[in-house]
Image 1: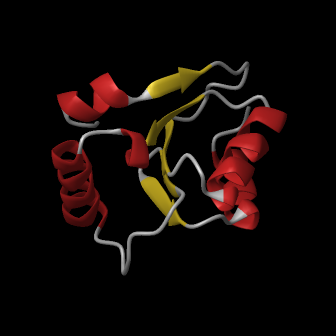
Image 2: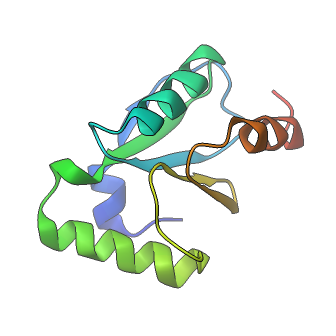
Length: 105
């Protein structure tokens, strides 16, 4: 699903609900990114994350290019949540709830 360099950077967070493939791109100091992680943790959802402010600038550029080319969002904002084949830009718990219901678990 993701290029090897993203797979290598992604940190996994365990959760008993693993019906979805969830990866979030975050900033370590972003309040909305922290809320997104808390939302997923509180619901026991397994996910992966990359704090893009804590990686090499060239890797950050590669991630941004990948997200733009693959998902074609109007803008890149954090958190950027990739949920199975869908994506959500910014913190949007209502949309996350819809996505949870799509796959059960």
